[in-house]
Image (cartoon, rainbow, N blue to C red; front, side, top):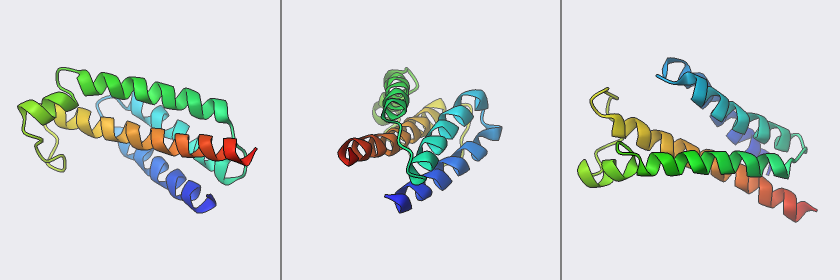
Length: 123
């Protein structure tokens, strides 16, 4: 579990750092830093199940918004034929950015949920 948490800590920290040039870094830097701190504390043996549930709830609510948004995941899949997500981001293709953000929220949620269930099992 320690290896997974140090890996997630590094990944989420990198993700937070890469948000500096995002159109809305004030949203995404805190999102990734919250997951970073939670995973770092779990690596150090300090588990906070309520923090994991709160973070996961916020992430999944935002992910649902991005999923159903007019330029979100459904739009990407149905109207744009699941266009490659690794292409260059353009203002004319907001569905790519929102689908990428959706994926980031799911990964962050998964990291928090893994720690939540591990902390519950550990009791």
